[in-house]
Image 1 (cartoon, helix red, strand yellow):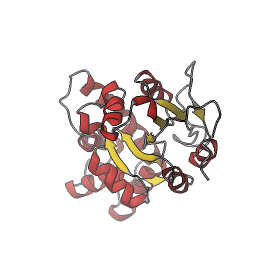
Image 2 (tube, helix red, strand yellow):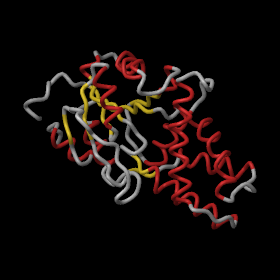
Image 3 (spheres, rainbow, N blue to C red):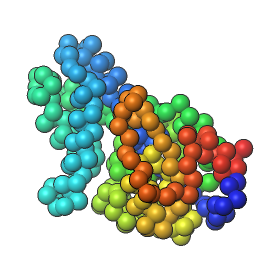
Length: 241
């Protein structure tokens, strides 16, 4: 256990997309497999990046009241339908579009995720705290073998991170005070919002989230309680065997 870290931590709540699973490589692989079956070819890395960017833009529109509340599945599908013509895929039928949209339910974990989570779960309550909807997170856990104790989603609170109610609501549902939760994420802005809500924070950089040498959200002057290169190293820092 890190001697400078309070011993009151009872639960670890995790961002999922990018922190626990490799969304970009998974979406690219799903797209290429679809193209292999149906014939359409596309710049799948560019489509994956545009899809992710559109997801963030759509969430911002929901937060500002420019779009009604909808699940991430619905937002992903809305963005996908807008992108397909740009990438020469306007001819994809409904079945193919639905299958591709549900690729977000089938994302692969980072190599350290399953073993790291299993170690952390031996001492702490472990739960998702993602903007992904509950059904998406449950299906992803089944697909990737992610050993959560609990699946918590922003969907339960009718708003998206970084709204403070998501972090405070997670503490409330788990039955702990906010300082007894540690938010684990690869995204400094998510951790900064969790910290403002009173949670402890652990930063797990994922330099390959947007591909080797790709973009990473700047840390800036943000401060975290722990920084670890992966989830196994986080278990080491927390003294979990």
